[in-house]
Length: 237
Image (tube, rainbow, N blue to C red; front, side, top):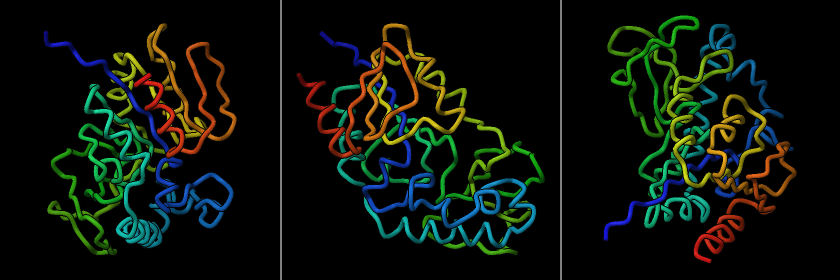
């Protein structure tokens, strides 16, 4: 008999990649302690100083080229052996894909990709215009085929999150939801768990307190790698 695989929706955040050596943004020692997010990650910052923003993401890509997926990424990818898995990530790195996850929705964009600049607050771009540059650099004056400046394929503060509806669909259809490596502080991603079904178990892996209260939630108080090990044991249990 061909049994239909249960669906798992994974929501991941910076804590998953932290153990690979990528600094988180909001924790102590995070990137926002060194960089003003309004200068390097907002649409207003882009309009003020495109060169600074391009340099920031050039540096992020360079660092990304030096790190590898960790055991948490690999464990998440391994879920596909027995489940229908979609990863919804707040991360802009490509570590889930490099670990073997085949369905990944990047809510906040992808650091290894760029697209044409369209103008202030204009999100009317086509996926066909998105260019994968790997770990290369982009400078002022580097133009897209349509003649406009290339910009990071990133959802800046002040811009809408175009893939949130796809993420809601994934969560609403899930049999199990797993939240790992995110403090649930950044919206709209932080509210995605609310779209899980009334009887859908929700597992949260985070060493810190999580500011949500819901009868469906079980909290595994571990960092991502150790927490994923425990989660896999529970699923196999």
